[in-house]
Amino acid sequence: MNAISVLLMLLAFSGFVFSDSFAIISPNSAFTLEGSGYAVTEDMIKISEIDLVLSTQTQTGSSVKSSIEDGFITLDDQDFLATELEATILREGNYIRVNGVVESDTGDTASIRFFGRLVEESKTASVYGFTGRITIDDNDYKIIYTAKLSELSKIKTTTESKTDEKLTIHILKGSSTQGVGTYIDVGAASESTSSLNLRYFSQDRISIEPGTTIIIVNDDVVSHSILSGTENNDRHDQFTADGRISTDEILPGQSTNITLDNAGFYRLYDPDYQWMKIVAYVFPNIEDNVVLGQGKNLGN
Image (cartoon, rainbow, N blue to C red; front, side):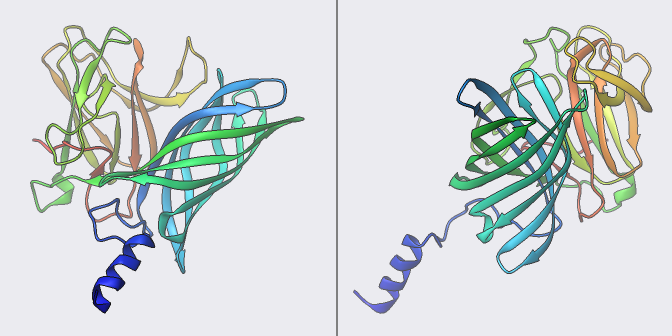
């Protein structure tokens, strides 16, 4: 066995393999961290979910500092919004540390200390195993999560002028009935690994540059409308409109345009069917429009 063969074997066993794995995490990128698991004390076990949006900032050595722009953590039916969280991605993505404070709609705060280890990765995402603590008053929960880190993947633009870019989103047939929606094969129009997701919109998480126009097309059999607002953490009245986006009634087969001018987060929802919602991440520090997931397109 020659020296080159030995070197290749050592690189492979040390984790530096030559494959089309998840992209190296770099500054000025956007990611989502989604997962679920359990929060455990000596007296109880609660179901817990994590759903965070990260934007990477500065890099020092093999570590990348990140800000958590938005998201929530749940304990059973109690939701905590990300208020003062930060994340550090360590050793070129092999570890993630999340620390800070989250707050519920009733003003309760919780201290977060999570540490994730890379378990597996594909071409489009990485899976981490998280352990750590959620501390609320005198209750100290140990958490065990499995979570997926997904990078916002680029759209292929159809024009050289960014000021004229338009993104088409379809309201899917059956969306007015909660739990029905449409199962979307996210790999059908791309080279990514196929998986099925229940959706009410053709895209329910988007990341775009400020000033992008979104065309909302109603493919359902009933009328819909779209507002922007803030979440109330109330199962019966989930949103409060903030006045930034408000459409007229969109009849079946018709469409309307909305433009997200300001940087930040928009939560778009249908006031009559509040399970229908879109999280829009308006992120100016990118070269091209991006969306979460595969098989997306820009249209006129």
